[in-house]
Length: 232
Image (cartoon, rainbow, N blue to C red; front, side):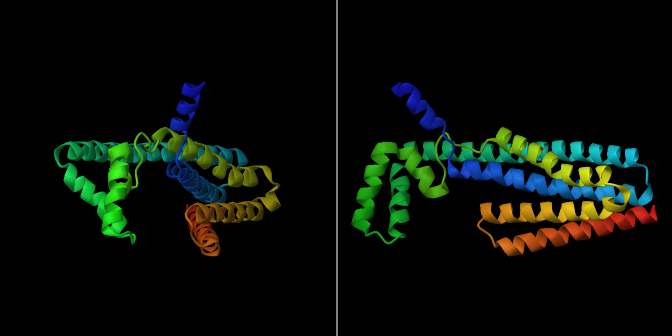
């Protein structure tokens, strides 16, 4: 029973890992909304054939989702490799220059207002308990065996991009002719508000600014692609 409990605790995601997965999802959703509506507006401005519009939108939705997923996988894999390299480097430094590593921990606590003597005591206690974990946390805010998961980020981005693109695709292809355009515009605005709100919450940003920015970008995207469709 104890072994199972310890294993569950070890595998529990850190806040940074969860935030990274959520970030990938929010970015994927926003990208899905904008890329799909861009294609829909370009094609719908050039033709009134609903099947053609639907196929173009669906093809772009799938392409966008898998593109975002592969991009997140490559990006987070690179980050994970960097984190592992840093941990290996710090492990080697602990073996070759322990005094310098201890001093880095001491300096960390001194910079936070702790006296030199107390900082030394804290450093010695922490290093005695978990030297590598202490050093990588103090210097890089990393936790040993807790690296960013590229598969989580890729899956989150894949699902979110596909989900985000569904809103304008459904609005443009299922709403009656007279409501298709205004319905799609409304769907994009509302979904852009949602992704702006979520991105601000997850990134500790300004909610109003993020929402307004996303809506403006969405409107500009629709206008540009509608213009392209008219030209074609």
